[in-house]
Length: 213
Image 1 (tube, rainbow, N blue to C red):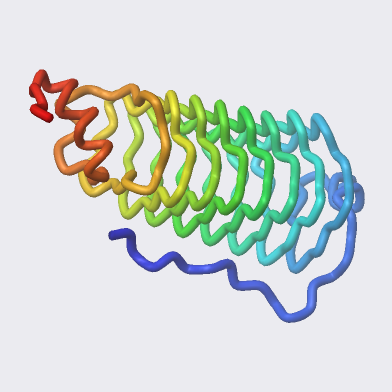
Image 2: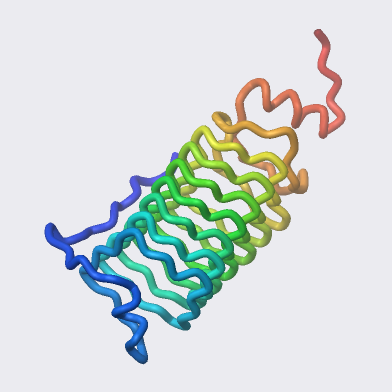
């Protein structure tokens, strides 16, 4: 069972502002901000720092936000498709109803992060470190979690078809409420994986076990 996830801590009042205001700065630092209904497709900021802020209906398609530092941030109904969070540090962050198709979290560190009702298809978590992270009622079709560290992870009612778990230990991971046709992993890595009775039949067949009706 995953540990209780710490929610983003935001001040009662946030300053309504725009990304454009911050991008004029040499080293943008977004703090106590509320940003709504803005489009900055293709934005490129190295080591962007965001703290105690909320983004709603913001479009950042194809943005390059490598090595970003995100702490106490909420993204709600945002389009973050193909955004690169490569090597980012993401702590106490909530993604709600967001589109993250093709997002790149490779080599990122995620702690106390929630993805709820999100599209995370074709996303890349290669060599990422995920600790106390929840995916709830989200789609992760063809997502890549190869060579990841997964600790205290929730996968609840998610679509995980064609997901890649190469070189990733799955001990303690519960996929019993998830749906899929196939997973990519090695038999040596499924020790301790938690599945439903129906799913167990499929894994038994992979092991060469004959099931008698």
